[in-house]
Image (cartoon, helix red, strand yellow):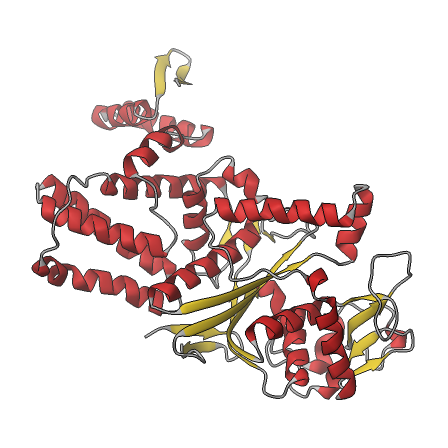
Length: 469
């Protein structure tokens, strides 16, 4: 039975959806001021895997992923580029959609834009004002009063009296409490905004997601997710607002993905150390990128480096080699099902354990090894049966959709790649072997490099190498 780690309870819980046949999911989507980087890619690929597995289990999925297409940063960047904001955001949305499609990410049930739901947001703010959990500040902005929500901090496990050091404190004089956050910001009529009962302005970030999740999924739904950088303040504030809009509001499971680390720092737009999805895909196949971003458990951070991506490239290549051994179609024999039932069940056990993709991948490689052995022993019935299983389980992870021979042919040059440091390290090892008269080892390294189209020449000044294309 499926268990999911719930950020709210900080423990794994058995999965029990509100509706036994349908799972409702809301994931905070893109903010359209720049292209998506692979940190975003990881979050949306993880939820893609979760959704694929839930579908495999037989659930109907109603997945909502919002688009934030208005905020100060979007407006400022569009101005700098001297572009109309609608044109600017539309272009970003189109390019991000291409990125997601290129990563084989299934589209959501619906992808609502904030600018299409301003009236809905205003209605929700009015409800918060009526029940006295929001107030009109001295400067005319509408603020949420966190003192009105006694459980504030329950998701992030923050203590309210310690929040001062972590909150962004701007113009706190107009607030009743420096911890209160904005629902509606009054602005000049020269700026982009909308008319509201309180004046011309724009919505705050947090109220947008509370409104959209409620509109499309109802007061209660199963899963709310995003990157773990959203736990506080965004999801904490969402939870506070939504709980005050309707006392019956709840989310069964809060799921958060780990960050990507690059040069010992979190990858983020604010730190300007991001790698765009389109740039990664220009160098690596989409399944390589998917594998890399799911090979680590989703709650753990990933350390990004090119060597790991090339290792993944080689690993995926081996899986496709196993798939390429399929020779003919056949009827499934019952005793084959029985013989390999436990192996397949181990994959499901891994996925049922909080979507443990690293364990799931280890099962794929057990199957791959058994395919290779069966093929070498000319047990083609077993070979073909296991190939079907490998493909079926790989597809759950969003992988192994290519025709094996096509994939291997298309990616042969990528697979054969060594970087300069790896080549020179192998040459050093070979030189030591030659010095110690370990000729077989030295020849093995030469052959290994030759198989990668790298040729060595021993000269009086040392060994030099050349790559032939």
